[in-house]
Image 1 (tube, one colour):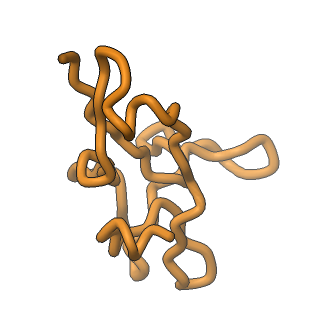
Image 2: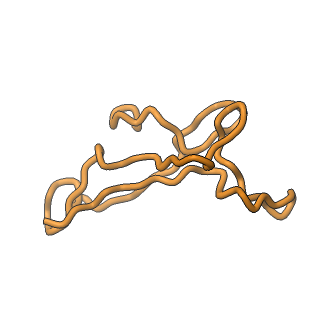
Length: 88
């Protein structure tokens, strides 16, 4: 799980509960140093910057959806994940 990777963060918030429901899928070769590209669990991060979250529960600022009003200052209801991949 995410805790095993040292990820004490979340990409989504619902009802005041912070959840890590987003994933990045990588090939076995990236993790086990096969081929010219490499990564590791420590290279996985939840991307945060000022303006992405707000409110009592520090939730991602939504852009909106057809059934509600649009917030043009919003982005998504999920925070993005980043993964550094290096070439060797």
